[in-house]
Length: 258
Image (cartoon, rainbow, N blue to C red; front, top):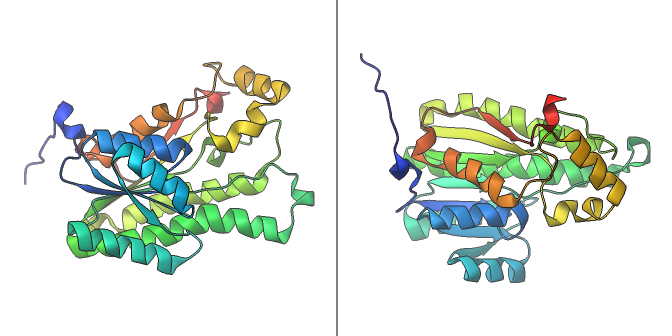
């Protein structure tokens, strides 16, 4: 048997004719991802809890809005089923929904722990499960999970141990699924952004000392634009990355190098 060497050109980034689900795709990094996938030709579905925000984003981008809650597996199953009904299959899924918590561990309540872990890791678990069921039935697909550089480093000066652990779980879960589903034709990868200019970091970015600390500890000296993260997602969602699975792309401006 001779291995086929794939040499992609610009056309490998095209998603024309493919269906794509972006959970958490109405705001922040998710919105930039949705915009990137639509620009690449995908028939995109933007899914999340807030119907008004989802519909507005979908109207701006030429996508379809779906309502789901990552804490509710049945709602994710229903959203995936609708995509399959309308397009015949689910080709690409990007899981962006998440929440943060900057709080010392000794002050963190059980309820706060449950919210962070069940939203960040539990949400990715339930989403991947529903997406893979559809992809296995169709003979394959691509899943991209949004983790964080916090899966690899301990952030400073803020205290966020629970958030960090939830994102680390996503990275290792992604690796595990990559092996589990490889023979089903499903590639599973993750992207770990550094500090990015989104609503999730708005409060911290409004604190001059904290923002200065972030810049000082980042070799490139700034936070990322969401579009810079979306470009890596497009790579993983397209045929430009056909030999990538179980990969975590860290886009942190060099933060984790020090």
